[in-house]
Image 1 (cartoon, rainbow, N blue to C red):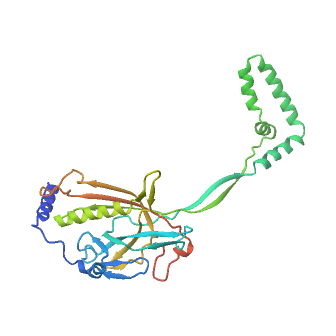
Image 2: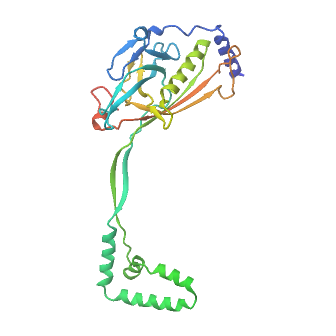
Image 3: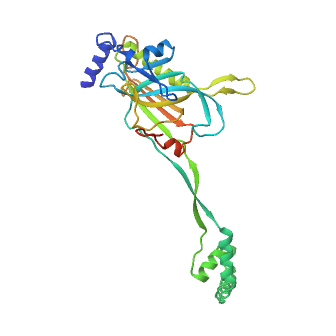
Length: 314
């Protein structure tokens, strides 16, 4: 019943019976992650930057003071995978949303297990068997006699016995010891970090519905390639990369980790909420659930992770 009342209240606001959420936008500040500069929305609009904010009071009211900012960049080349090896053009556009639950970072380093020294192990076993006290010779003779008697039982039994008389198996029976290769751990380098964000966007007006539609379109278009040629072969211009940063009251949040440029690897959009529902006047969904999966395109070293005083590094 409470859900029905809530949905009805939202429908009323969507029809214009609720409060106007399109107020106070001039106080929002867009942040350029590279230069560290901020500018309010009026200045951003004057500079013809594409800035989209949801909800309208994001970054201004106490209830919506914290937000995550996504900005798009074009990769212009470079050799290597560190944060200083690739050049970018931008930012080209901005989308700002409330910070979802569970933000953080995972730092994975590649360590693999490898076995070495196979030849040395075999040579060691051969030496032990060749210079032993004759126990191996007697054991081998016994095994051969067992094979001869088993021959009368058929070739199948001989096959099984033959598999058992391997060098390592024989060495174990003679010495009572098991030999293994040496195992080492080798470092294979840092891994690319991944970040996943899920937003539940609920419009309270027709303007909100249009804003949400623009936000979804923003991510879908920016993460897709532009086809340059498609006759004999397909040639694509690379999708846009994304800058991601956390803010409170228009200022970067220095106590949260920074994020290098990311590729948007996957987008999931679910319309209509748990029980699909739309507004009657324009058929816009009453809820849009948006999940974004990003992967960093730059590998991090100590110089990136180390922080300046009062700040947190990547």
